[in-house]
Length: 360
Image 1: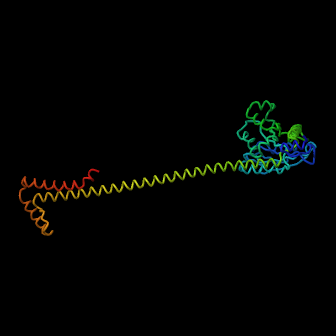
Image 2: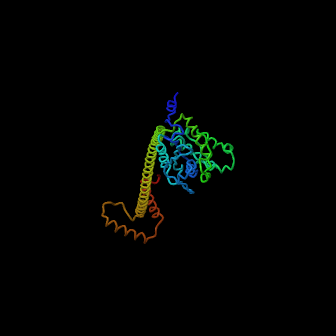
Image 3: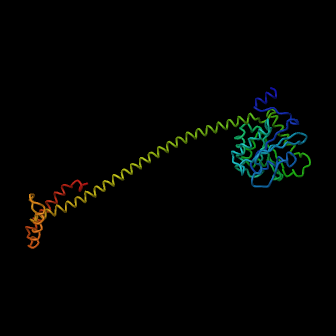
């Protein structure tokens, strides 16, 4: 199989020989904020090509490309905003970092992920997944771990350092381009390309050969973008169905709640009306009972008669006269008995009339 066929089978673009001045070796620096991306770019290029500042915030907010001659060959370095940028949202960082593919057209030969020797944090663990999410899983073939500020190892071999952390070793293994240690403190004192940069370029050249002599292409980036977009649409679709289902469930619960509330209000209104009716019935009962017993007592005493043929005015006069005469005479046992009998008789009628109310 020819080199062009081999490159096509890997989905990569053709690259010129490493020493070609017509097409420079294209390197993209990636990494978390504060891991020395810009300093590493200056070390590789042998001069202060990128702005470096001691700051808790990320200095680089846009992709920057610098192309210089290093060790007799053209080297192009693209510096990118840091992952988890302090002033940019994750979406803005992803869009801006994605521009490095266009800026390094037809595509970068290597992605260098910067890590500092030290504690391997969750943000470092997420860096490789961040790269896969941005450039697709195929980007790991072009990715190399670049340990910056190698002087912090204090003479310890990087292999011994990696053995101290299984998670870090796994992270490095996930970057199929291998790893390299760079001492950025040497940048200010170098007068020519130092050996550490020469060795880094040799490792990148070897990885280019392993990848069929090609680079990470814009077509691969578009495929990654398409896959991400489809995944997002699928997730949004699933969430849309889930949200719709939740909305229907919430609406059903709301309707159920409103129905219960209406039922409670109607029941409360019914109880209130029943209570008012009961009270009215009680008042009516007592009023009729007292009136009836009074009338019965008066009839028993002979104060009132059952004569219905006379007018009310005449009745009232005779009742008053009889009551006055009764009050003036002593009350006999027989008269008292007739009073009680009349009261009981008329009262019983009222009790019978209102029996349902009393038994409720």
